[in-house]
Structure formats: structure tokens, C-alpha cells
Length: 359
Image 1 (cartoon, rainbow, N blue to C red):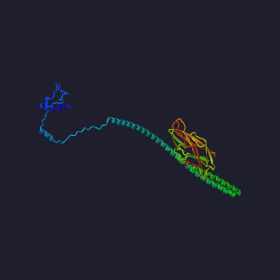
Image 2: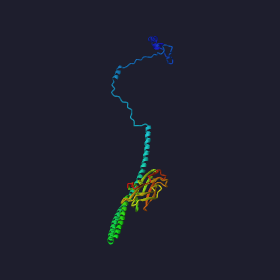
Image 3: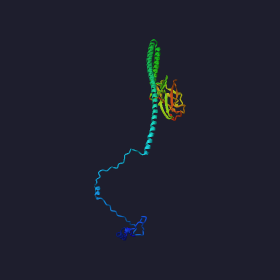
Image 4: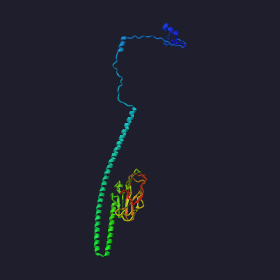
């Protein structure tokens, strides 16, 4: 490898002898030019300046003890957040404010509806109290009438017995036998009549308007199967064409026989949206217990109506083999005008000899 610059021993020797005179000088433009072929290129010269220090003052500066430093603390400014975060939060506050205003409006509307419903509820409560008062009066009158009937029956029995005793004393043995037979017949009829009345009274205890009694038959909807006393009979309500709710008579209707013979009950007039068994048997009375048969039924949806919240009404007419005629009311409240979509509920079936209504 070629020795150039300070690696060249001959050149270094010349420098030691002549100093900077052997080093290439700057040209007229003040630039040093080097040639690769020149082994002395690459070396430049400069003046060596030796500093002159004031030793006494220098020692003072070295011995100076710094006992306090002023910390470099940044200035404190107010709490701030990024604009991107601020914009999101501000928009959220605006949205929540609008939502609060909307909810306040909705709360006011609902409060008005609640007040309206409270007024309606209070009026209905007054009406229910009136109906209960009427029912209590009717029950009290029925109790008084039953007592009067019992007293009259006893007096009649005593009068008949006294008349028979007097007649027996005046007539012959044949007449006495006939009189005794007549007495037996009369007492039997009175006993049967009293048992029939007791059977009817025991069977038809319940809410006024939810039972009917004729001479030999009757029907009843159990008090624990009644949610709305305002509609006397079968009643169901449908909201939004699908939400079906039984109000009265979900467990069916109990039909009673107060006579000593089995009876056949026949549906002579019906309702399009209620299906009953065409006919059914009701057992005979046993002493003071009426014969009973529970009848369930199938209710079906109807089509479009002329207006909303329409209450459909109908009457089921039942004829008995003893000649009695019973009538049973039914109500169907339909909330929408369009066709209902709940299909049908219940089955048309007779449970002879059973009371499944819980009455």
C-alpha cells in the first residue's frame, strides 16, 4: 500500500526541518487542491494557539459552591381536553337534553292518562259499591222471604194436621184411611217443595245477576270465576287482535235440576261466536242437593267491525224437558276494527253430575 500524507516518513522529516513551508498552500481562490498521485497530499497546516488563563480567578470559580438552583417548571394553564373529545361530549349532552325533554313530555302525557284512569276507576268503584249494596239488600230480602215461607209452611202443616185430626175423629175407618193418605200426600208435597227451595237456595248462592232460577232448573257462574261484575254473564276481552283475556265464566256454567226427575237441557237459540253442546243431561235432585252438570264452551274470533272497542252481545236460550226456559247473556269486547287473530279458546263439553266451576 502506498504511503501518503503523514505515513510518508520522508515527508514527515521535511516537516520537522522546514515546518509548514513544505505543505501545499491554498490557491488564489483560497482552496487547497489535492492530487491522488502526489504522496504529500492530504496534509494541511494551521496555527497552534495556546490559551492564557488567569489562574487566581480560575481557582475562585472552581471553589464556588452553588447552593440554590431555580427549577425549570412549566407554567400552569387551565384544564383542557382535545377538541375531538369535547365535540363528542357536547353532542352527547345535546342529545341527552333532547331526550330528557321528550321523556318529560311523555311523562306529562302519561300522568294525564293516569289521572283520567283514576277518575274512571273511582266512578267504577262507586258503581260496584252500589251493586254490592243492591246485592246485599236482595240477599237480605231473600233470607226474610225464606223465613216467611218456612213459617208459613209450618203453620200450613199444623193447620192441615189439625184439620185432618178433626176429620178423622168424625168419619169412619175408611174415611180415616183416606184422610191419612191425603195427609201423607200433602206432607210429601210440602216436603218436596221445601227440599226444592232449599236445593235452589244452596245451589244458587253467589253474586246477584250471575245466576237464574226457574221452577225446576237454573244456572250459575261461580263467584270465584268473575273478574268484572259490570257485565252479567260470560265475558271475554281481546286487545290488539291477539291478547285474549277471560273476564267471566272461564271455567264454564253450572246448570241445576231442582226436580226429582232427570232433565234434558237443549240450546234453542245460540250466538255465532260461542259454541255450546247441542243438548245435555242434568241429574235429578237428591233431597236438598240439586242435580248439576257443568257445561264448557268454545269461543271463536270474529272479523272486521265497524269501530274500535266494540262490545258484541248475545243471548243463549236453553229449553228444559220440564218446560222451563233459561237465558244466558254473553259479551265479547273487541279492541280493534280489523279481524282478530287469536283463533279460538275452550271446548264445547258437558260434565254430567259434576260441578267443575268451583262454586
